[in-house]
Amino acid sequence: MTEPILTLTGISKSFPGVRALHNVSLELFPGQVTALIGENGAGKSTLVKTMTGIYQPDEGEIRVKGQVVTLPTAISATHAGITAIHQETVLFDELSVAENIYLGHAPRNRFGMIDWKTMKNEAQKTLDSMAAGIDAGTPLKELGIAKKHLVAVARALSVDAQVVIMDEPTAALSQKEIEELYVLVELLKADGKAILFISHKFDEIYRICDRFTVFRDGEMVGKGFIKETPENEIVKLMVGRSVDHIFPARTATIGETVLEVKGLSHPTEFEDISFEVRKGEILGFYGLVGAGRSEVMQAVFGMTQIASGTMVLGGQTIAPKSAADAVEAGIVYVPEERGKQGVITGEPIFKNVSLPSIDKTSARGFIRMAEEFALARTYTERLDLRASSLSQNVSTLSGGNQQKVVIAKWLATLPKVIILDEPTKGIDIGSKAAVHEFMGELVSQGLSVIMVSSELPEILGMSDRVVAHARRAHHRDPRKTRIRSPRRWCVRRLVLPRRRRHEPASENP
Image (tube, rainbow, N blue to C red):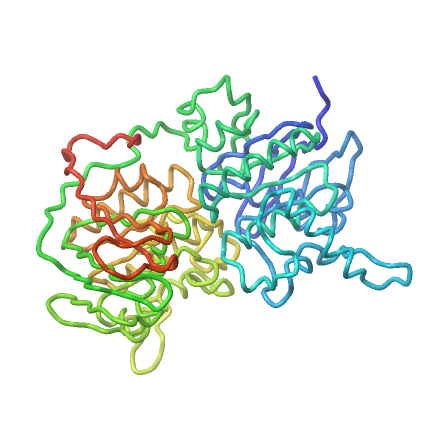
């Protein structure tokens, strides 16, 4: 058997009140992709930070090509040949693409100055090898989320690393870009790189991974070869139980229309969007990344101003000019970009959850901390939040648990309509089931849910009706005499047959 490039043995790491890792081991082999699988809070992120020099282990050793190494800093990990592509990219909007790629290791000329021409040329070569379709001289702020993620991939590849860690690399990519990433992974394998691939999507894991290692509650509970192990066995290792029904049966009775949107248009993002959502209903918005779904929802929430159109909530016409107006009217929005728009990472959990409901937790101008804790506990327990305490800083939570904090924050406002934009993005299969079950509870209580998702099984399994979004090519609209711009969006309303409530929907469309 080929010797592993990277070996971790007996790694343990604890924080005050939390044992994040206990005696875990991991091996990464050249030319192979190893999947690191586990629920949110299982210790995956802590292990990655240990491998990249951000954390130092309390116990255990790390070997690179058989040699014991210490990684006191992130730079030392880079020098050891270990690089990571994180789920939440950390880039600088005011710098160019090339500057972001070579930040911290820019090529120098013979005078010790940055060689700008070489840097741009080398960055462009890396981008072209990925078929990214990005000009290295473009300011980063001009790129969308998916393109920024590809820049983060290029940044990692610009270092001649032997070990490449990919933490949810496809979370913000369209299907076309995901396929391109798969090709890139195959190129890295052919080049003898050892790849650690972290994902909650089993279709990805079974497509590109060779081995797997499963973590649960900070311990390694299983490993093996992907082709030799059925998916249900990995899921059982991951959650400690069998997950038979991902999409729970619901018994909600759909009532009258709560929110009606007519002819919603934006100068550049979408045109003539109309839909309605009823009491006790989950209305699914389906489309791939970049289809314009989020832009429509942000307009409904008052984050962006519309050019025309009307919205009627509970029989009253509303025109929210800000998010505060929308919340006051009874509409809340759980964003896709939770790190930037959903939480205050420098504050504890209980303050994040109680922030929009500050009037409920204060009296005579003073905040009552006991009320804040009680409010936060009510909703975080219902969502099965994994944290040491409600005083834990949100920045120390896993991505999936941060998402739960955002959902809990808005549910505490007792809204009429809740918009969930990719609610299970970056969430493991066990937590997905918890979120889906809770969505069912919400509609059973009469709440109206708009769920935006790019995962078709989730749309089919959870929605009562579906609105499909798609970017149209430049063509003539048969209903109008003018030409629609490529920046316009179209809406197709698909009515799904309501499934029998006692029969869970199949995950296959």
